[in-house]
Image (cartoon, rainbow, N blue to C red):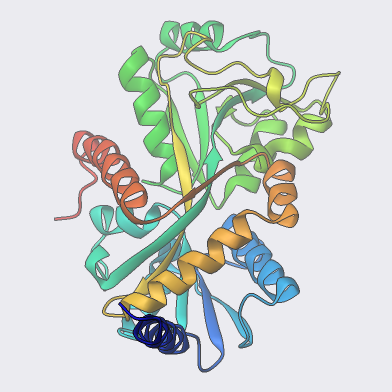
Length: 331
């Protein structure tokens, strides 16, 4: 190839690349962040932290408006997402309830009405007892529950949700039998345990940290394959990294984690999914996000594409098994 021809070919290639870049999808109007929880909830904090980081780092040029639609345990937000079919300016923030809610209730949406974008973190679950309880570890507590079937109360956030699902899993693998008592949110479950009105809960770290700092509750184990990251001491010199995993503490459930997920409506352009994947991956790499993850004792894990769909499929199958065994599947 002559120098002139090579130069011409390279010029054409660069021109085509420039055209492709110019045509890459970008928001053309304000972006709506739909939060599938009430104000102040975990999902709300998740979405607003991401909004703050995006705004600070100018990752999206258009304004971002956060809208809370937490009715029906989050179903309201997903139905709102479905109504935006084809519109990539409607971004839905949730958890695994996006794909689990349709199992336990007849709702106005199904998973195929949503397009998965990413997950940025995993919420951890711990087994907690009252701070004055005599039990030093998970094994001792479970043995006490087994010795007195239906004599212990397990508090949780709502019915047929993650807390009750995990309680059912604990019962299945240990033979223990709890009275499950649902409350409106993890903060209420924390208050009830601190006051001694129930015997345990499986709250996330951030839901019980205030009561742990005061010595009103204590963690026995974390449902994670590895211990939580080291951090500042919370109570009597102990911090999150000092809590044993439930498996090493004698409770044979290796993992129970709730993903913090992001979705778009169905039938949005593929380029828009790629755009949000890129933005959210950048968010996950910022110091602000890492500080948020540490402060809330979550596990940072960015997932997209096949990694995300594989995680969803595995998590869905594990939860579906519990729903069927408990008779929770909506007919």
